[in-house]
Amino acid sequence: MAGETRRFGLDAATIHKIQDVLSQFPEIEKALLYGSRAKGNYRPGSDIDLSLIAETLTADRLLQLENRLDDLLLPYQFDLNLFHALQNPALIEHIERVGKIFYERAETPDCGVTSS
Image (cartoon, rainbow, N blue to C red; front, side, top):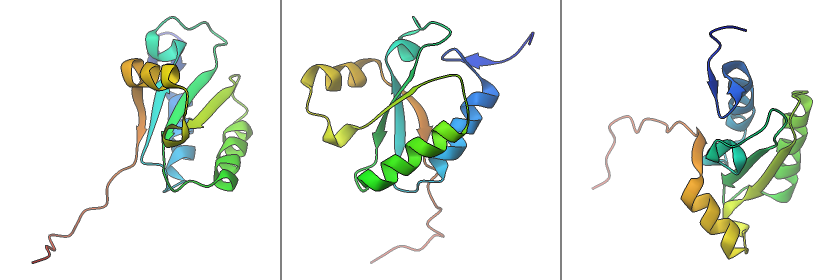
């Protein structure tokens, strides 16, 4: 479609669908896009690499997330990981260097209440 907004090689509707699924998991603080889509050297069928900042996300909830993303029936594979659980120093460095914020949970306003 002419004039369609694209970011990371994905159209705006696709990005919105993925972000909507991520927003259904309050444990997720951020999702960092890395790999070829973050670097800009992706191909049309490149997978979507996301590292999740979600220290309280359990393995069961991660599986639920993977299933919901799969249910979107997008023509992409998803490669998800939990950033805090990574043990590969090269992958950690890559995500820190090229990672782009793909999703960030909206903070709830504090209603002006302060503790003293």
